[in-house]
Length: 576
Image 1 (cartoon, helix red, strand yellow):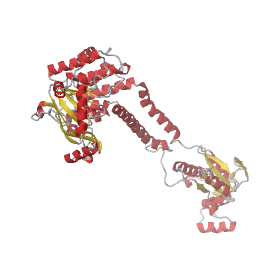
Image 2 (cartoon, helix red, strand yellow):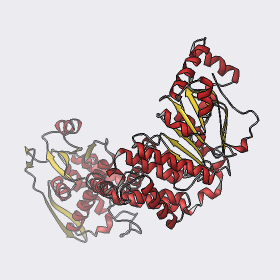
Image 3 (spheres, helix red, strand yellow):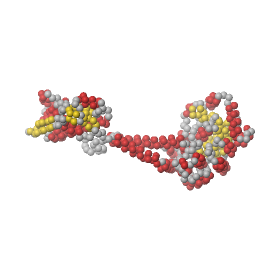
Image 4 (tube, helix red, strand yellow):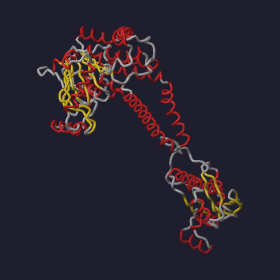
């Protein structure tokens, strides 16, 4: 196995310098083990290997998207993610394996967006776009990305990577599905760019023979760089005419060297290096957690805000359905909330067991009332009173909140509440009117309580007979509150009406505590909606923002846009 790595090379002279690199997602599944890679500045480096050998993960570590479990990587003289390294940033051009483009953007808009992120002026972006459209044989720049073929979309992705003339260009399979003539043009452009600007280029490809144009080739297999040298040196050393034959020999040689089982061999090497599962699991993949995050300039960069605002506004305009969703969903939710929650309850079933009158049916009863008063010697007398419970129920029926239903006895009345057919049961005693008029008459005359009780005993009545017994279902606080209020307000109006009919000033029964109307804030009869609506609106707005943001982040992560944005120096908080 051949590995020509110059030992006297300096990190500052290298575009990429990797030593003792280990990367694992979980033990013992290592993506690459003890990997070493050396790429000089101003060269083209072709990284070759089968799918799943770790090429894409290695590139992700180089650009700072992922971190190693062990080892070190130096890119353009600095560690990825360190302050002032420019990596991630405009010094790197990155074309990921995924398309990583906004499909609702045109070619021109795509170039504008990424060009502004890279710090290019609009005029420069337009000139570069025209050049790359011609070089890569792209259709008109006004064509939407979604309307391009797969090969054309890959070429647009390549154009985004090279548009800002980076110092290091990393291309993950840029020539897949590309016409041979166009592939030759792309390679010709890269070779000329290296000569003119001393650009460093890393390229991965499945087309091994096209890698002969690279200055240096690295063969990667099973997480190891099994050979690294110039194409001519590799062909000469192994006596082959084609690089594919060289790769075959290297693969067989690697299998011969590994006498121990693969997993045990890797575990032994990992232990000797001090690589542990916990070491890597504590690190975040995104380099935004390093010192790079705390560089204040990245939080106040106007070009990033300009590009992000352009992207967000354009995506809103292009996605009309999403725009309708964002604006109409809160409106629909508020309307449904106001319609279903917080309104004043109406027609609450109220069970009545009135022993003063004859029961007829659940919807009606023989309920007539009468009250006749007179004044003699400046003293009010109640001359005649009949079924005053019916008078109270008349006041109660005027409320829209309740709907009265009649029952023959108190047991069936309470049973209605227990069975959920009514919210409350009201029971009037048989001598309710007699006891109430007795109580009212003696209260007007101002007799002391002892005389009143003695006279009540003589007449065979008790003051408790005036009680309206209420059994309430309080499982719903709001409904229970409304019933409390309606029963008390109805009795207040009932009492004031009786005093008025008996020529007594209503203020006699007026409560000592007087609530003034209107109140300083709110209304006399506040609804639950007034209390709950602000909280509901905040919840709706919050969860709408969370839903939209999370869906965008998930989509961009799956399509590779989040990685590309990060490599282009867009911090995660700006993507929100």
